[in-house]
Length: 252
Image (cartoon, rainbow, N blue to C red):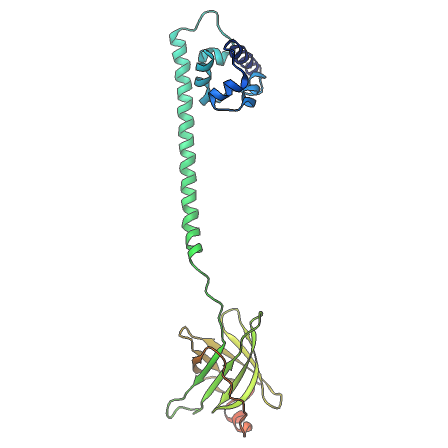
């Protein structure tokens, strides 16, 4: 601290000899006058990058600035050269450190960009939607030989909606569905007498869905999507009991 105070007094004295204000000296060094004031009050020391410009502005030697006093006998050329070399070496080390810091920053920035850019351009897949009309048309000789049609309404904000299931163009059951976290759908249906049923729908990439009925666990129905809106037929099958016994029994 004592060296700082001596250097500060020397800077103030040399500045006044040059008839410079703190603000004028700061302007020559491209710094603030507050910084000059701190130096002169012994509250800080000039940055190593400012030593040479400061010495030139005040006609001081580097040795005098570091020593905090003007020597009656000017330092020899060898001493001044040594001080200048030490200053240059310090500046070179600082520049090398700054280059290293910039390199580390650029590498870190590149890593962040490599990670972030794909996330910026890759859009999240849209949540699965079941809305539409689906139909299963059996092949000749398939068992069971059954035309299925499924009309699914729009879901609410929780992913729940209603559906109607038709067999041979007759309404078999109505119910609600929920959207599962894995992209599948669970349907909760009721027969006309209130008997509950539940079955699973698995969407395919081409827009079709696989319908697994409880009475046909070994034969999932692949329903092709016919339209993006639900299509309702609006009448019930006359002999629902027959379908319930043979094809659509409730879960036990």
